Amino acid sequence: MKRIKLLIFVLSCVIVSSCIPHKDTVYLQIKDGALNDTIPNNLVEIQKPYRVQVNDILNIRVKALDQETVSILNPTGEGNLNASSAERAFFDGFTVDVHGNVRIPTLGYINVLGFTTEEIEKKIEAQLLEEQFKETANIFVTVKLAGLRYTASGEIGSPGSQVLFTERVNVFEAIANAGEIPLTGNKKDVKIIRQYPQGQKIHSLDLTDIKVMQSPYYYIQPNDIIYVEPLKQKSIGTGETALSSITAIASIVSLISTAVLLSTRL
Image 1 (cartoon, rainbow, N blue to C red):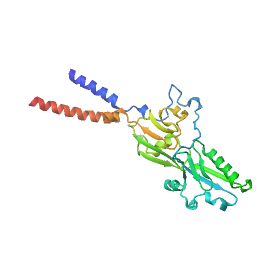
Image 2: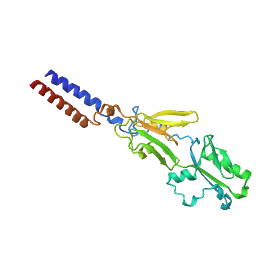
Image 3: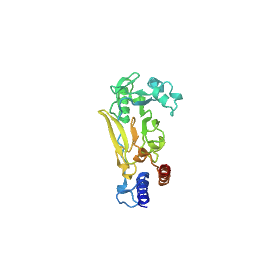
Image 4: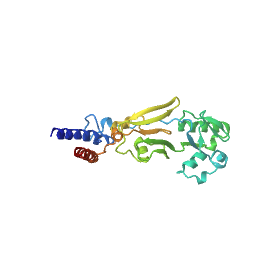
């Protein structure tokens, strides 16, 4: 009888420790005792202007009253440009080289490293007006990133590189586009590996806390790597829910009981 009670106690402990708690699976929880209908501190999303890095691809377009005069500055295939094609954006765009420069027809090399797209627009426009055009030409320059490329890896639905044609993507949108985080993924410690001029840095986000929206890393940047660690329950190999854990444990107990019965009969 004591052995049976001990076995039941051990099994109960295993079941409790092996199940994934509900609080570990829910996004954007209001923590620290806040009321359920209250968003603490009137959360404001934080997004700093992105500054161009090496290997970024820029989509540069120049318009003027006489479009023929700026045709050499625009891609030859502009009329057939497919905005959803990462390959076309790669071939028609201007890649930032290892020195932080882009090479533009008639303008030559222009340094864009560390500048925002708005600053690059003004820089190109000023150089065009200084060297080639007058104010009456009404030069209009637009500079955009040719897609936001990032990589999702680890415990996520569809790991791999992704490209989104937008300038503003938060971590939830990026993860949803990569197939979501399964129950066995650690939503409390999602790693953002980000490129900086000095090298890479790793930042951690707790996606189960609503205050994640206040993080400066809430919005992803080009070339970010999103890494999701597996929970210990997956490493142990136990079930994700109480029912699956009980099923696994029952199978183990059945095997042990059979082995004990066979050994006593020998």
